[in-house]
Length: 359
Image 1 (cartoon, rainbow, N blue to C red):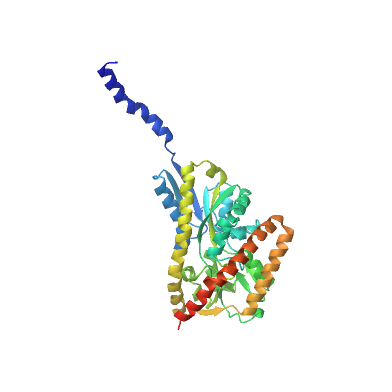
Image 2: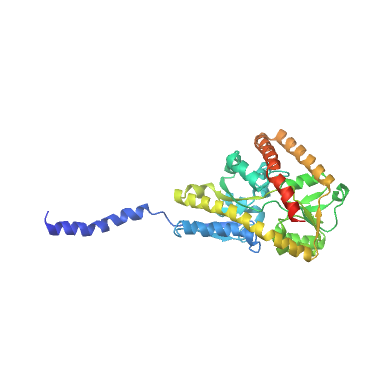
């Protein structure tokens, strides 16, 4: 081959290689993701927005996810349904919104007297919780990933003071998940309504009390203007894990790099959301108290009755449902070990340091 032929072949090489490079490039993908939360609840809705933002950044903008707020495509309490039926590819939602479909879904958000943010996370990641959750979500043709947490929530806003267990009798209480069933057992009348409907329901007296999240979000929704007694703690939500749920068909079609981008984004949201709440809640609580909110702790007899009712309920549900039994048998010993460990380390420290700092 002469020199001119060699140079000609070299010049042509990049042109010939280009199609091969193009074939290995990941495809452009467009998804819709709806949250169960409105945009004004910016820390909660941040979960949906941040997943969208980070996935785009991690895939050189080839994987675009458009985030929609509650109600923009599907009702806020039907996000899982919208993902399951393919209306949207993904949703940001707590799984305990769907206990009517299967009560065991509550384990993966929070249960009454369950673990806190760290304890629940340890069970999910190291105690088999994620695997059990994946098994359940397969029934809905979905996959899911932890995506945010509020931390321990407050006990809610009440139009009248709760001084004893008697004051719970007949109380019309907006409350989510299995916490509602616990309050029903101790005499209340629970109901689940979306966040946007709580204020008018309290104002009209359709409900007597409502729990939502904590000071930062509760202040935005203005509950202190229509129900001044603010109770703590939200013992039915010692944490509140959110999930990103994705339709199985949509997930399976993704390249591995895009799947990794989603998982990385969800881990980042889990940590950042908790940090934002821990920063904002103390400031919001001071503002609420200054505006007239009356802080109250639950009477001990209410807490004791709720503890007893919770564990009786878990055992009854486990006796009727083999899968609930399998999850409860995994969860309870793990939680009890965590409680013992935290008593030795964190709680012993907290009890001293928090009291000392308040002097």
